[in-house]
Image (cartoon, rainbow, N blue to C red; front, side):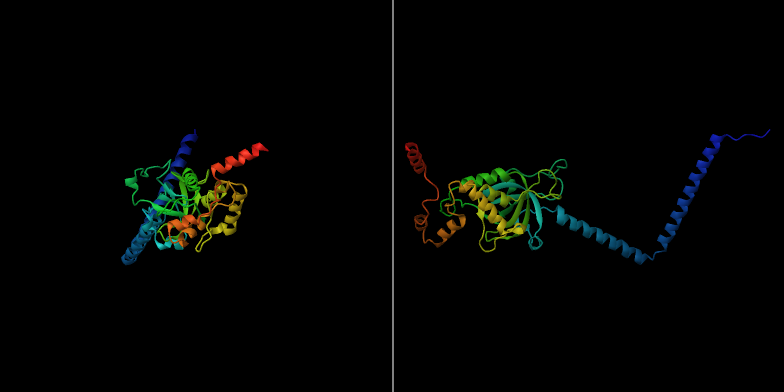
Length: 298
């Protein structure tokens, strides 16, 4: 009587044979690769290995310089940053005047959650010579008290607005050039609300300052207005004037920062400059009270 084969055992034998066949094919392929490798002349193999190592080292150095190296201060900014108008990211650690600030450069990953393993110093002694002095391009803020000169009206308000807007926050700076005070002139944008800065652009800081009415458009020689253009800057400034925002709340008769600097530059002394100061730039409190009393009498 013939024996009937067990179907399950036959299937297992077929699977085992397939696996053995695959292993044999892989072994043959590996032996062929070894033979081809040993057939390569040793000088050519050494040259290829050296070339791959050099390419890897060069690529690593480029990526580190481009994305990983931190600019400790303004002296670390080389001319190629200006030639290529490079963008950098950082955190604002101090706002010393109404149109410039200190930036702690934070390249690549490691400075923010969820991948935070690098720390931004908070003590002044640890921040010394560790920040870039940035001058915001395209705008001019009311002058503070310098070199014995009194500050302009609205300087304190303009400075307070800028501090509230950027101090301790991430900003992006497109580096343009150095000015006569060794500051880095840059276009500045705020961090996007939702998407990372690599995929989206935040609000332009200079236009936001103009819109709030705390600066004027910088129009002197060498002014940079970027892709937005001077006309856009002037349009936003005119809009703030018409809405009586910021320094324009009492009208457009206020002395501009450019006029303030020109008055002091042409005067022979501080007394002469003060004598030439416009007296109608900000209505006095007494004048407003007199106007109110006259209105109530009608």
